Image 1 (cartoon, rainbow over the protein chains, first blue to last red):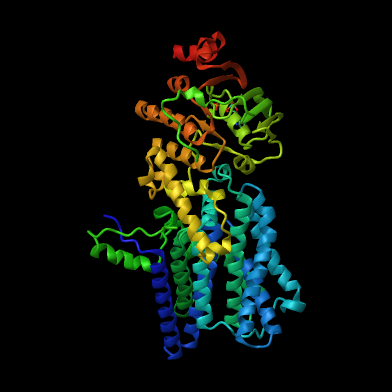
Image 2: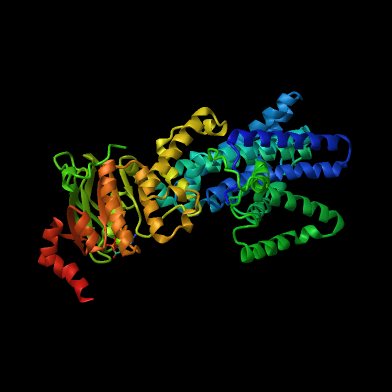
Length: 337
Length: 275
Ligand SMILES: Nc1ncnc2c1ncn2[C@@H]1O[C@H](COP(=O)(O)OP(=O)(O)O)[C@@H](O)[C@H]1O
Ligand SMILES: [Mg+2]
């Protein structure tokens, strides 16, 4: 039995409508005051971590590298965006400018690190990004004139509202999805699968490695800026190695190479500790132990992560439902890109 | 893609050795530490020629493929691709200049579908840029559709077009080998290197493969250089054969000449006969 396949424009239309409805529903609930202040902040954080996990997934799941400094790019984006926000007059245009600036600054750092690290074959990227994450933190502490130093950068305009975070999450996911379902995305996947074979097919492997890594850094930077706009105050200690590991755990648990996996596990692993923290005293002290155990369990029972490389779209649900209805009907083959 | 070969014409009519050779190696050699894996290797492969490289295990055949595709850089000697020096090329440039290959130990993109494997081969045949892809501009749709059709066309050489949605890693061994050939062909080469294409195939699959190697040469007007242990295949498909032993060419000639060469019988065929 063949599955019903919708034509691409129809899929896009369905997805757009569903996403717009979700946005409206979310905004309505928030403005109706259903969620308290703390809960609203958690929802915002979930959005930030979804962007972080989905962007790290580009470098780990799709490209097959192991960067250990994602929090470093988040920090670069957070500080760059926040500093620009503070310099610009208040307004929604400034909000957008700060986010883009945060992303681009992080991408520039990604490019600077990626070019030397990715030209070499082997796992140099892990070590170099590990060092980068630490260096960034120290640099932020020492550049206290601009960054506020160890105590942190204060009085950041709180631009990150539900609509803005939501739109950034959706744009990130959609852009990465479109990117991966193209010749560029296939080139990146082919490098993960077999680098020598990719080269033998004429794929410029260094170029695409750097492209994927830079894209990953770009979106991490955007997440960083949104994070700053949600907290109002950021300190370098928040962007340490453990933060990078937190994000990596989300990607690995969700399934490397699965966007929906990254989204779900980012949402769960962001919300759960925040709720448990208030009910279960001292949870945070054991968080890393619990994560480690979780990871070991996943590695034993489902090494590919909870979702494997399975990917998902909203219109897919409708296709699934359509299978039963049109079990006999001839399917329409849309251009599957 | 060029016009089809007229099946009534003899195979040898396709040979065109008057032109610049597709590949010419001059005193090519490589050492791994103290070990000389290949030495003083000289061959030319003509346009649309099917050439074979045989020799016992460890003779250095795969190493020669790795030299031709710039996976290894030679310690000595030079190599010309369609008349131009390949000194400054890397693997990627060598492919773009017209060398495509398969691997002895299959290197497919296992988690990708059959179609996607071929599409990676066609990567450089598409030209849309990243923004065009992300914004799904008409150029993206146009090129993707056209390339997809081309990929299915290529898969139909081996009658694999219906498998396009299957994961490459899930295919049976023989199909994986065939898919590797299709992926290599997708890069639009002037010479195709096949490293033991019949390994692991049963006699009927090998027979099919033999026909297809000739069909590929006749359809695409490209040269083929193949490494193979199956003597039946080598003797019936190759127009010229080189025999390698301990990294050196010990004989070169038509399959008939090779078969009767006492050196070859001693080094290779003789050995085989004993076991
Ligand atoms: N990367 C390498 N490093 C060291 N030795 C190698 C390498 N590649 C091949 N060799 C050696 O070169 C010789 C030829 O190997 P190979 O070309 O694979 O043989 P064949 O394909 O004819 O069976 C072998 O002795 C092998 O061990
Ligand atoms: Mg070999």
